[in-house]
Length: 204
Image (cartoon, rainbow, N blue to C red; front, side, top):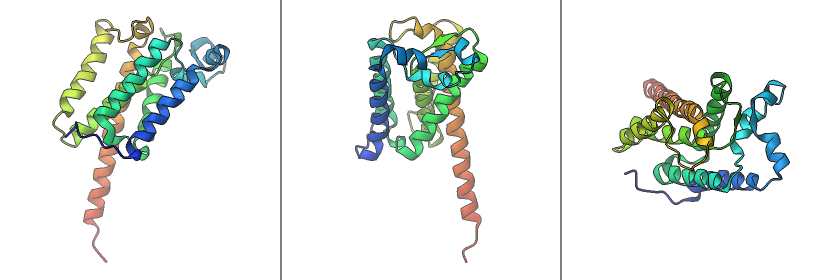
């Protein structure tokens, strides 16, 4: 059942480490944070690291808390998938996917900070894994996250933290969800293919 939350260290240390890193970065000097924020004009001048580092920056405490709570929600629903060997690749794919998608296909976004794109991606990844593993709540969770980002993108955002950042982030959220779903499907296909090859290999 999706409400069964594993409590072993392997399932909560990786997301906790990410939460602590986000919190520590929040207390960096403002000049450091500004040098890490996603600023399109600076990226085009060669500051390519800003594409990925910007999402780790939170300029408002309310924005930080909202995203940390979001990470907690992901743990509550999908703790069984948060072992490092599953979580870290998914974290990498969704964070890279949402921010490079933003840079390449959302030219209207000139400035961006915040972890929400990756959080949406991780939630979609977990929900898609639930669907692929025939978990009872998988489809509902997947429909909720896809419906939320689609509504925000096409109709208008429902702000979760009360900041203008939420409005600017709607394409980033969409790219995050797409990255999470694609990654979950690719891993599932790879696992099934490997299992099929193992079962077809004759014993020596």
